[in-house]
Length: 203
Length: 248
Image (cartoon, rainbow over all chains, first blue to last red; front, side, top):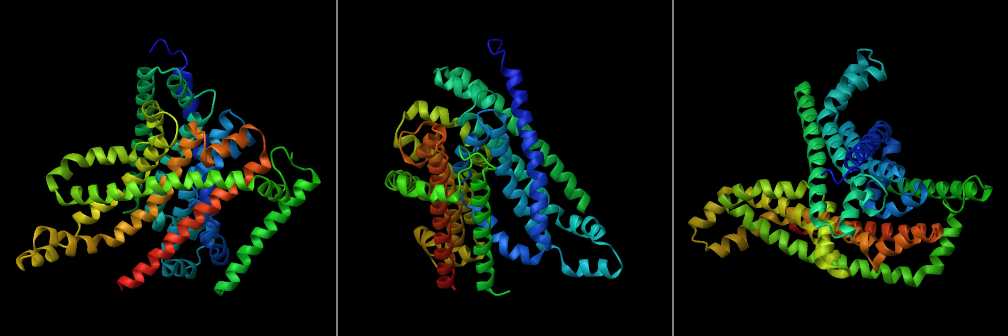
């Protein structure tokens, strides 16, 4: 692959986009999910709206994101964020709802403050669902960034793939797809490792 | 809190959001080139009406074909894979790998093979819908209660009767769940192809508005597709509930 001097920088760029988008998706997803889950009124009103938006194929937002953020990394990060945000939010919401109210009541009765209740009671009880959501979120963020790059960009793995396809360099295209697959499988393997760790910790 | 109250609060929140957006846009705090006011979006909606509806119709026809194909193929392969144990054990890793792989990576290849037009959109949409349905149905067939099969068998049921009278009724809920999941994936696949290299359809419409910096039209078209897909999913949910009711 010495004919591809852009390969390593492209790979790093795609990786960076994924990391930034995923970090943002975790922050926003956990935040919004916690607000929706902890406050019953807010949850009843807004959770169905979030669910309905999740039923829209996310790619319809991509042209708007491209218009806002241009062809550079920002629009890919925004799209990856959007795809990762929903499963994480919904997992946090579902996780909080499955925590037994008795455990919370007992912890409160023993004088635990809300923050302590969240960290010591709710987090362990919802860990299973939460980690599953985080893993789905990562997979979707990765897909979002790559879809964004293929649909329109100047750099990153998706752009290289698109370029090779446009020039009918099919063997290059297959090679680039293989490299990207390694990236995707690697990230998923990492996520499953974390998932198993978290499960062991819960038990 | 009553259901009507929740609905009223939901509607009120959306209206407040729209009003705030309108105010911000009118006050000039955001560039109308990128963030047009809701009123401008509504006008754009009226302006592009026909063209967008034709695009939406085009997309929905392709989605419907892809959906029918993925349900038929997904359910039949799912039944085969679920009932033949050796086949399942051999093929399962491949199915899981293909299911998990981001399909976008094979899109350029599909385009090379099938060229432009409706065919790649239908094929790509079908691939998107096929795998989740296949995996769900195969799992359901595998988990059909052995006792039921044994009893039917000992009462002399023939092979086709086993499938028609025991397996099929048992997997109906899963098939419905798969159909609910599949429609969004099919629509997603079709839209991606239209955006990537379409000459017609809603994906192409969205893309050309974005490239032409026609933000009001872009927003209106986005809202139209979103509303259509939410309506389809809610419709399927309603159908599902009614069928569940009918099954008892």
